[in-house]
Image (cartoon, rainbow, N blue to C red; front, side):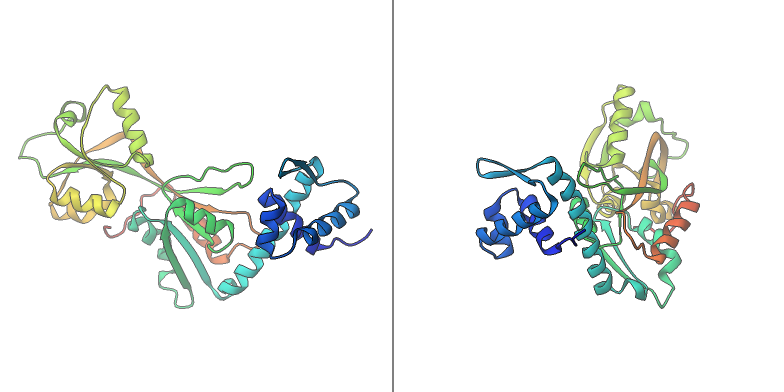
Length: 302
């Protein structure tokens, strides 16, 4: 059997990705005729057409879709090799992306086992989940830490591990001596600081309020847990957040925990992609975090 020409396969992959010969040619800096010739040679080797032309667009044939699947795996593996060599994976480097709104407490808890290791080099980056997943897909990151799961599709599946869960509470200024907070009775009358509707916490809280026919008076919706902590401390409102975020304020008596919100918790995830080589450092961190999954991160406040 003749050997596969990977140069031809790369040209095919570029055209299939663009769905358009002209755009692919511009991207590859070659002429359309040269690009067409390369693809024809691949089709001749495989014995079947890979594209059907529909107007100016190219659609994959059944074989073309199969070949595209192989091509994506082959070139993803090549990108993984290059990224691993460039970043020094074999030299104890760990590249971690964290969703910008993620509690810094959790990040420190997750990294605690390697923070004192002088031989370990950490690269920590923050961004939106979509941005970080794109970098994970191209192997620029080893793992993404998030408080939202990653949803896969036909083109990309993610490995999403649950690392930890922590209770969500209502906190506010210290109550007068002898006064007891009752969730259903007192919540609607108090100004509330809450995470935005994009968060898992808010989704669960809204469902709970709907079930209990409660209409909380939301004063502010905040994406960033560090900002939510500051507002909880200084705005004189009740705040909905994980207790660990305001641990110092609770310990010092600046804030009081009014109640644990029933059936609402924050979940932390480690998101990876399937790889030929997974950093031993990362494997160890994921294993230790999984062992302690039932425990709540106990670290300094955000």
